[in-house]
Length: 318
Image (cartoon, rainbow, N blue to C red; front, side):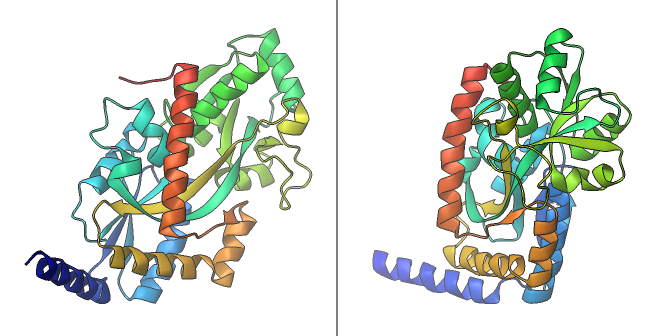
């Protein structure tokens, strides 16, 4: 009887996957419009709509540093119709930083689909900021402790933890100003409410090219091919310091593996279309598009890594 039940479930799951999707699919973005997560989601959603014949609709669910979208995805029906466009902050960092506020554990209660891209962070300064490189930033911050403001997309977010790591490594003190997403953080920086931030090329490229913001360092361990004149943080006085983020897709736990496989194939195919890959690479991304198993290992490893970093820095929101 048990074997017959398992066989029935397998046949039903296979049939569901073959019929998937037969209605619109929601892609939840944990931040407001205009940031890297939102932009990547919309590029890929358009291609999935074309390839799978159903609308992939991007919904912005900002708030609580991504926890609102996390909870909504984890508690949705396990049928593949609610996807999360997540990153290191949402999928790996939040379960430690917000251990008592989250009712779920993202690294266990969501199922991985694919890590789509990886992108190094950059240190961005206002156009009039007197420091032109990392050494000058460190010197200025030491001269005037707490006077320089830095932005993040929320307490405990990746940009926040990265700046905390940077201050600890450089022996500096700056003042944290959190915002509800990268777009309002950039707006604040353009208005000189904050002077520096760890950000991504995707969100700041236009302002950099227009001369409104300056990129003073790159978070990779080697210079980017797209921006060879921008020095790395590691070569600018903090050897070994690295800062990068990834963006990937996951969905509700217990979603049938056949649906996960179908989604993975569609995401990988979309990311590897020449025009999509060209757009993503031009914005500083490295296209990954790996398997669910590979992405799952990365999420769990990053959850352990950032949990240790959060505890070391003493950052925990109870």
